[in-house]
Length: 329
Ligand SMILES: Cc1cc2nc3c(=O)[nH]c(=O)nc-3n(C[C@H](O)[C@H](O)[C@H](O)COP(=O)(O)O)c2cc1C
Image (cartoon, rainbow, N blue to C red; front, side, top):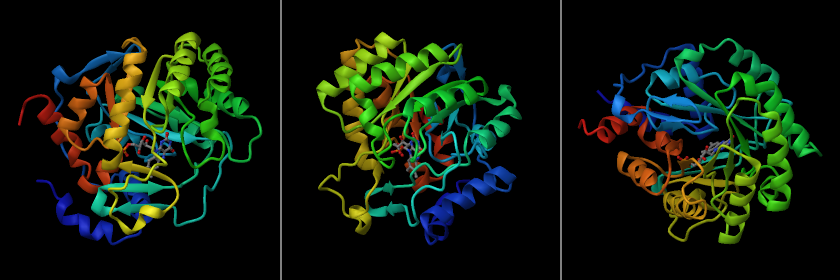
């Protein structure tokens, strides 16, 4: 039975970040009852030399410190992306920094890469059972770091061997200047250096939805020429669609959830067309149902990720989506 609709009013009575922290703690301690989900061989796919039991993954930002991923994998995700992790620990922005936009089934966050730093995260990943499922590690730069490349290289070197894949996050709106790294002249040397250092670990780059066609073409060129293995499309948006109704819509930060569905899909479709479908893509942004996932796969994605839909539908959503995607409803 799906208990989430009964629990939701109590969860949503808490400040959003408190609810998130409790969920992570409960998953970590094993006190959260996990929905039972079926595995469907027909949903499995191989990509980057990895076997994904299903194409639905947990997006970065929920399990920033690698504490909850074993439970998330048991709850039915085909893969989990932890992070964003920076070389040194950092507290992130002042609270409050996470806001529910209930009427819009959306969230605005300006967390600012709050995380335990790569050493603590590495210790946790070193203990993991690699057979339990695919774990990607999303890396970023410290807010006060002058040298972005050095930070990404440090993250890749420390965490790359412990990860099934590494994602280079250059698209968070909450670290000043970060998204400038998406410009071709910055991206090319960054991706060249990281690809030279990646060893056998697949390297992905995660981009924003707020990009013009020309910017997408520059990124595509840098990705192809550098030998980057895949692209995650997309991170949160700094746009505020006129359709937003919730009181928190003016909060600063990145918007995720339903209002991101259309822009993320559009950018992914454009990127797929620009690259002739040759670069594996992971779709994220507003996915909240099997139909959304199917549409993103049809737009050119090989895998999908979600986060905000869990705030409104709970972890049960993952199993329900898999049931429906496999035709078993
Ligand atoms: C609270 C919150 C924190 C996030 N933190 C990160 C992060 O640290 N790194 C990252 O690459 N993306 C982060 N994201 C973006 C998500 O991974 C995802 O790309 C985005 O939310 C769109 O998917 P969704 O609409 O399903 O949430 C965060 C999103 C939310 C809502």
